[in-house]
Amino acid sequence: MLIRFTVENYLSFNELIDFNMIASAEERHNHHILQGQSAENIDLLKTSIIYGANASGKSNLMKAMSFAQNFIVNGVAKNLTIDVKPFKLDSSCENKPSRFEFEFSYQDRQYAYGFAVDKNQVHEEWLFEIGHDIEQPIFERVKHNISFHFEHELFIHLTEEEQQRISYEARSTRANLLFLTNCQELNIQSLQFIYKWFAEILIIVFTNSKHQALTSLAKLNIDFFNKVIKLFHFGIEKIQIEEFKDKKSGNLVSKLITIRKNKAGNEVKFEIKDESEGTQRFMDFIPMLIGLSKDKVFVIDEIERSLHTLLIRRLFELLLQHQLFNSAASQLIVSTHEVNLLDIKNLFRKDEIWFMEKNQNGESVLYSLANADVDHLNLTKGYLNGRFGAIPFIKDVKDLGWSL
Image (cartoon, rainbow, N blue to C red):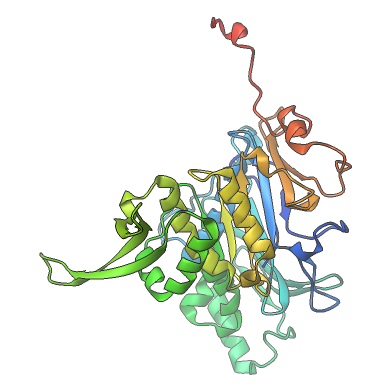
């Protein structure tokens, strides 16, 4: 699970910004919290929702996470530069490294992994085990020098020869490559589970994302697909997979089919491409729901695209209240413009709601409603009136020389 993400000097972020999923002392909706299993574990939230005007930096937060994830998982070719994009509105930032850090909980432990890079090299990289009273280094890198703390539990099973091998392999890590990425190629088992969190647990979805294996996944999870479709009342009786032989290749091809009933009560088949854009978009979210039942972390940009407010609300209610997800250590983090979700009485806790806006220097700043005295307010009205910032500033049309 994600505990915290910080980023500095990247896209619209100049100074370090801090987004976290740490539960506050708020007493409302305690079932939204995943309680730590030990004294060192941090209590974490299942969901978070981020508001802000267009160009405020909401999507840039997701892009920062995505850049860091991609750089960790895929690295960069030997002779290529690193595609990092420093903050442009301050000339001093151009030659400064950009900094990224994830704190996360995985396999009953908590870790902080991060790095600082410019276009040419990794300046710093680090991995710590963390907790309420723990900050224990596992490895630390400053440019070409990587030091290991072999007394840490992750390494305690290694022989002296194996420790020497890791130290030797670390020295061969290219300047433009992360050591964690190199561990995967070198098959250094001790740290592969950290790499796995980024490669398999963290999933970032942008507005143009489409699930590439929807039919195959539905084939393996057809009961789950049909259970979810029934919960959302699309008027679809069921989903099924039909197979046919391709005329050109002769290969067996699977197709996802929806079944509806006509006035006479007879079943009528539809291909997915014939369903509404909203239904198709929702179908792409069903794999997410499967993932959320299996301890994944989903980060979704502009979740409201092509989906009605009530569907989005039902999606959150399902995750937070349905037995399908009660035991899952999963999280859903989204950005949105949908003000009708600003409900701290029935849907969200205050610490689950965040706002992003630009300051006078063009820098994105991020803040949460945690500990704010807003319980008596109409949040939707307050947000639209600019009480929390994070809304577009629109000049009077008369000032633009337009007439109505």
